Amino acid sequence: MMRAVLSSGSAGVVVADVPWPEPGHHQVLVRVSAAGVNPVDVDAGRTGPFDRVLGWEAAGVAEAVGEDVRGVRVGDAVMGWTYWFSSGRGCQAQYCVLDASEVSAAPRQVDAAQAATVPLNGSTAWQALLELGVQPGESLLVMGAAGSIGGFAIDLAVGKGCEVWGVAAARDADFVGARGAHFVDRADALRGGGALPSGGVDAVLATAPVDEAWQTAVRPDGRFLSTVGQTLPRTACGFLNAHPDAGQLGELAQVVDSGELRTRVAQRYPLADAVVAYADAAAPAVRGRLVLTP
Image (cartoon, rainbow, N blue to C red; front, side, top):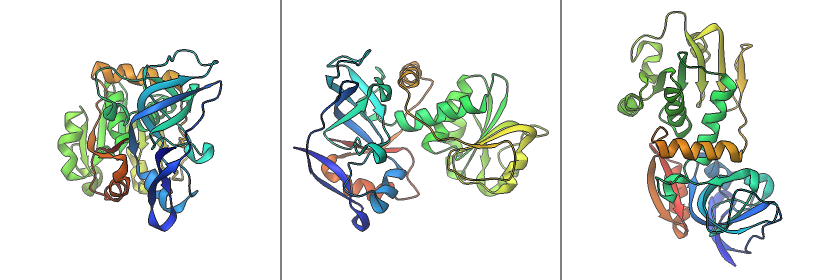
């Protein structure tokens, strides 16, 4: 048996003993060194499905590798993420199983806790920019710029040569500016942080719910993409449902190692303190990712 974090309804989460996972031919058994705690984990802990191992993302060491897996060997440092609510095999445990398509080599220049913050939110930011089709020299407005997805999106877009504006609370102005973006004060709407390009930006990425008024920030022929499932009345508004991709995870690891993608670990907790970590993760003031270390 191993220790794992389980969803438990009104109580949120519990740490309990569960059977060790067994990897299939196309899977990797990971000895978890660190697992991220995301806001979606907090919601799932309360609303279910219940008695499932929680956790979307982790970093650790490949303990066993299925015979059909290529590119990962026993002993490799790896990171990955999975749709735990459909597979029932989350990452917040001493061991987790990931499909070969969900796992890649971990970054070499950061520790496991930092690497564990990359797979879910880094993949979402990466795929959002691909979906928006942003090109070097284009302008991008990121809503929720101080969040994990928003911060990664700024890093990646600036690295591509885009001019980026980041919308966040006033206290996050330094964070947004340090990442190479123009700060826009959320409370002051479009009047804060300097003027946007005349006629609007080429693309908007909404990683937080937005008011319809923000649609005026994008050019009439521009692109508007949401990662939060929000419907807005414009033809060019899309919704991104990110998916694990081993190739993209490998590229993200390289971008982390280059220093272009910067991780933020707000606090680390032993797995036994998962209840405390989940309570802290529910606080709106959290900046950076909380991480469990089994």
